[in-house]
Image 1 (cartoon, helix red, strand yellow):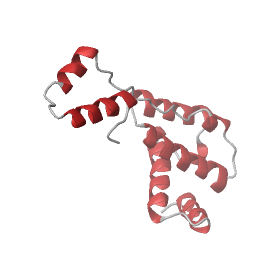
Image 2 (tube, rainbow, N blue to C red; image 1 turned 180 degrees about the vertical axis):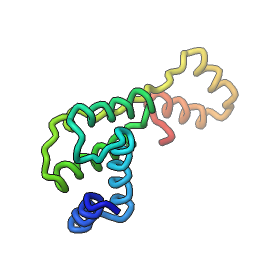
Image 3 (tube, one colour; image 1 turned 60 degrees about the vertical axis):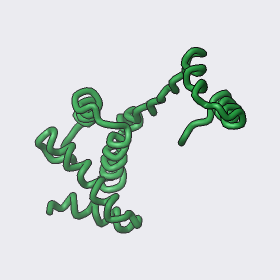
Length: 135
């Protein structure tokens, strides 16, 4: 184990990070170092930016994955090395919004047609009209 990794783990232990968080953050820094094949303390802002662009555009990493990498790398540079990196403030990916599927009037009629009980039909009509979802 390198001295930097040991120091980062000690810094996380002092702050009460869980073992899983420590593992994820160390993995994020290891991924950054592996991408550039250099020690992470020697990397420039531009190289860190390139790594995040690679995660987003080439690997198509999920928002949660990028967030873990961002938090781990940010912790390493700001807390362990004491180095401020403005580039890390630009990285946060937007949350993807999933649009609901809206049925046409014909589709709604076809969906409700088999329901014979008036009470059930009314309940389903109200549920759909209010936009209620299963979640």
